[in-house]
Amino acid sequence: MHVIDPNNKARLLAGAAAVAFLTLPAAHAAKPLAEKPTVGDLVKASKPSDWRQLEPDNTVYMDLPGGRVVIELAPDFAPNHVANIKALARDNYFDGLAVIRSQDNWVAQWGDPDEKNPRPFKTAKATLKAEFTAPMKNVKHFTRLPDVDGYAPQVGHSNGFPSARDPKTGQAWLAHCYGMVGVGRDTDADSGGGSSLYAVTGHAPRHLDRNITVVGRVVSGMPLLASLPRGAGAMGFYDKPELNVPIGAFKVAADVPEAERSKFEVMRTETATYKAVVEAQRNRGGPWTKVAAGHVELCNVPIPVREVK
Amino acid sequence: MHVIDPNNKARLLAGAAAVAFLTLPAAHAAKPLAEKPTVGDLVKASKPSDWRQLEPDNTVYMDLPGGRVVIELAPDFAPNHVANIKALARDNYFDGLAVIRSQDNWVAQWGDPDEKNPRPFKTAKATLKAEFTAPMKNVKHFTRLPDVDGYAPQVGHSNGFPSARDPKTGQAWLAHCYGMVGVGRDTDADSGGGSSLYAVTGHAPRHLDRNITVVGRVVSGMPLLASLPRGAGAMGFYDKPELNVPIGAFKVAADVPEAERSKFEVMRTETATYKAVVEAQRNRGGPWTKVAAGHVELCNVPIPVREVK
Image (cartoon, rainbow over all chains, first blue to last red; front, side, top):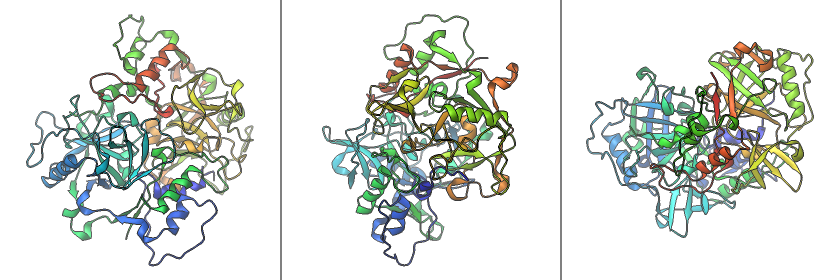
């Protein structure tokens, strides 16, 4: 069977959103790595200290009919929006609302389908001042990629998030890669607040960077959003209410009983192991690859995630 | 309603795969364009000579239960594989086979689900010498993008296809953007022939460029492939035969009665209008955009397609 790139097995557990359902081994045997290890080899050989658990207070679960979408929030980049999204979750704002838009090669978006009788806000705010960028000094652990990027002076990973920055302005921002979650807004920059959210389901629309507040990343469950039927309405909105995909619950992980939490670990992007992951993607080894790219584009760098059973 | 980027309406008709169902107006009123026209504005103001029809002999239709996938083949880049895929179609090779793989943020792949009793070949060949690159001189109408690309010395569009080239080697190749169609292979470079094909359904895996024979682009029907349920097997293969998505027919458009053909036009990428499209994406105008990127990445440039009723 032609499989297109057997090395790609690594992506099964390492893609922007794909997740491996690995059990954590009790001990890590120190096996010698191949001369050009794959991302999968590196994950297998990694140490426990190469990983961090998701913080329950900065993780939200969106339960859809098909399963759970797990989103890691990025308070370094958008502290006010992250706080507001947690307030919305704690107000049960999203429970019973829906995914109302799926536009091919673009986004899936969720929020209130009822424009005429919108759900009222309780403790959360309807709108906030935009957080399109954040001061670089607020962002932990920037590990810069060695390669050029056309959209930003510097790109790399900050504590597990693809990000960019400009030393001239001192600002940093999250990059619109596959699986990133952002805040829908109208024309006014300050017209969003988190009650309308979307996840990128297509090729990274990097031209949206610094035009929208990005709040986090889907670490599990992207297929639940990316494989939704595309909406037939303008911009992929569902044109019939019965096509909306109901949100059963949208909760902060910390508010979910521990036994019901999804336990994920994300590779620490400030580690030597992650630098090796980047290099494995820049110059892929193995017998399948005939020409190594010698380059990696920000949104093509896997950010390994694994489930801890 | 928060819509995320109203300018994005242009994408509805201009994305790598999205298609507008416009009727061709009888006459084109010469309306003045806005100072910073959107892609949609440019499409509306375009002249008939900015467009070309798909050539029926270089177009294939794959009919799935949900509708038709229309693929434009690129004989300039992969003449032998294109000829072989047409031979496969004319042998009715794919009819009754299936989409057997859908891996999130990667590809949907189709071919023979039966490894034990594979469908025999008739006039088409099982394998061909790889066509990962083609001589630059064989490729018509390269319109270079003004921006840097990390994966290739030069990138741009060749007769409607995103492509790259290296003047030092004199070689050109198709780029793995969203919606591009390639030939599955095993480890041996010459182990593919076109009986196993895939379309890119996620972020462009440009590191596959020059590692695989790319044969064309989906110009209509990407949602039929991109919204398929993801396979639970390794690398997204469906793990149960009943999940395979049957291919009703796979035919060269020229072999389909004219009344049953899908009539699409693609914007000519060698025109001044297309240069304006590129610029509209590089520096987007309108009240929604707060920071214009001043850059466009190859796979983010829309290639407008429209249906002619």
